Image (tube, rainbow, N blue to C red; front, top):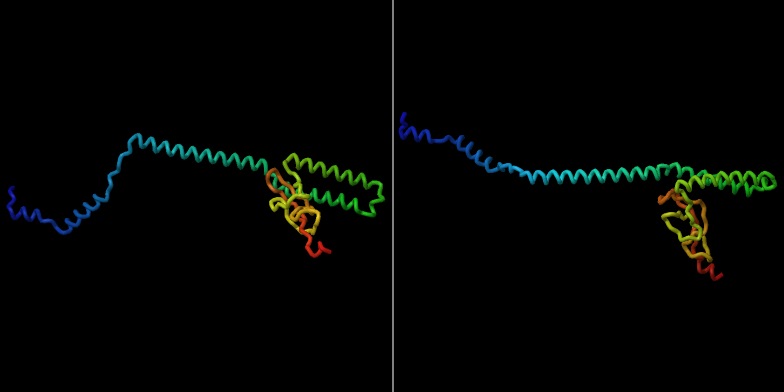
Length: 197
């Protein structure tokens, strides 16, 4: 079947919808970026990077776990130790109280009682030392807010200002951690007017 020129022209005519559709398809084709196939070397490099990242994360996690385990072992009894300090405080108060009690001074058994209490105190101190808990030495040392808590200032002409001259309550360390600060009295200079008098 042979087409006439007029039939050809009609066949070649394109509807506006078709034109719009063709225009949209061309725009979409421009937007579509062809997916680039990764070469084997690129795939291998990507896999190696992921593997190295995963291994580094696993190593960091292992180190964190070891640190937490070590700290749990070393400082697991931190709260118990902190609360046990009041036992030593009370034992020392009892010893001082017995020694200063006028009614008990004539009692022949007082010395035995005090010795027995001091044995208990020594045992507790020994247990503390085995577990890394030691008393902070503060007398005649420079005041350090990391280890001491100043409760009062005492005018003093003998010691340098800022020196600990009185220990109100003993402080303790557990290895390298502060268990309880020492409550102290700190020396301060005597006012000039009083010095002249």
